Length: 322
Image 1 (cartoon, helix red, strand yellow):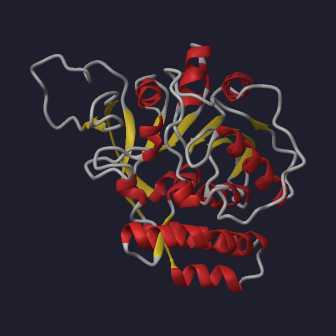
Image 2 (cartoon, rainbow, N blue to C red; image 1 turned 135 degrees about the horizontal axis):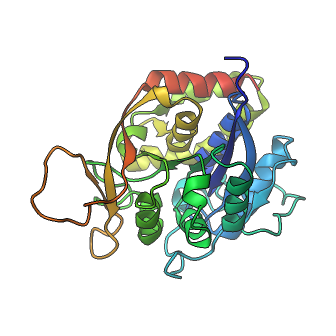
């Protein structure tokens, strides 16, 4: 309805080619108002994630949007062992060697920025988490009221009842900081999780990429350029001429939750051993006689289906008309 105020969103991000696409998509979505980006390691190290976030906003002509730099280490102070430069290029943006951004991140840390934005707009801010969940876990530790103040947290993470994409058990964002993920999932916040079991159904094909190339939209042109590396990776890893739209799909889950269906249950994360990063949902189909590690914990919503054609069409329409 035209009278609705756009939903305020903060995107916690590790840009990343599909993050770039997701950020541009959010900026092109009238239903939401991006009030900040917070950065995290994942596809790249945190310092580069911040540089890329500033660069993307400068390219989009949106230097009014603040960027808050996030944690450089995991919740348990571990260092980032694995970055996905083989997926996104050494610069995280398809090896295009963009000039350094002119802007700087704000003084506030990502966790403090999240806490303060939620506090000043209680119930009104949706947090879209596209990387490991360290900043969000830190915000929860920083302010016991954060989970009540934040409107909703929409998370790209997990692989529910399918293989992961780092190894057979773990999806990359959860694997990046399993301890943080377990803190967030059991925090009692209003959480919507979209795992790769769903985002792998959302595919941008080679012919979609050609459509971007032939469009006059400046975002479309930019994305066509950076997508080369991402297509090569998918071709090698998955033997497909298409790329998964993980991050854009999750932005659209924040824009229009009706594009997905969900089940509700308790999610716990395995934090050690060979299945470190595994997400296990108690789907409530059995009443267990035993007290388990899932008992009496807050529930979250987990996406189970997606209207993939509608998601891809929205992504294409909004990015081409830019």
